[in-house]
Image 1 (cartoon, rainbow, N blue to C red):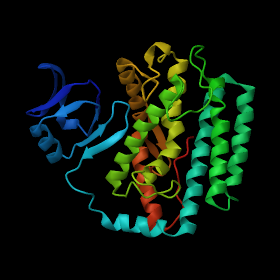
Image 2: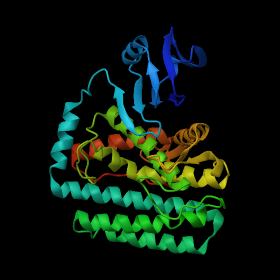
Image 3: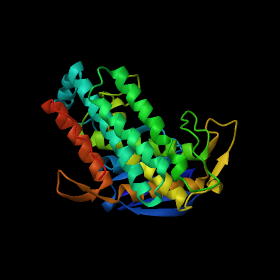
Length: 333
């Protein structure tokens, strides 16, 4: 079980086998620790010393983020022990030819999943312009194999992203919320705010998977190394952006589960458009529901949760490094 704590000014205490969330001396929530895998603390949440010791002893992954979901850090009892795995990761990625090959695999599966998501939505909508976009994305996929360097690959991905996001306003049926175009830092409208916050939560999910596997989150293939940038996390994220977050954004808007009243605007803030406190919890619950949804995993020959598939793909990335083979990303059926 994974819990998100977003109520500001609260304190998490341990009582026996339970964690108790208090605010101003009043109990507002109780969690049984037996089935607890991870706690995500968003914003001003305090832990007692006794609680910290308990979480570390039980190896319950405890993640600190800002209220907007930006990663701060986590409680770690010790570093991952699989030094051989990380050594093989570094050795593989110091080979520029191999590194570029993995980069092409990452871009291919991202564009493939973007196309598949649009295809699934358009199965019901039957929009002619979406069909044209699907053809363009197919064309972009065919160009990846012949890419000669990273700059060409970046150009292909950038063009494909513009084509892909061009479908959003055709698919979103909410008359009061429009996508317009992708804006990141900061997101300039409600739909972009949903995407940015969702991608931040997805990054935390992938980082957890990378930590479990024992890889170094800061050394990836496609995303360049920069101080503090989790390049490997961003690499693995790419194939799951459309499957997890983009799906939730489009579907929740079309079902009117999220609407204009779920946002507040403040031009003086770092985030000029953001969720209300209640709506943030609601949106997180939709993402969590998606991560718990069952998908077919061909390598296992059975269905499993999307969360487990993310963790499986982190392991597959590690196997690719060790065996110096191509990365077989998860493809949406």
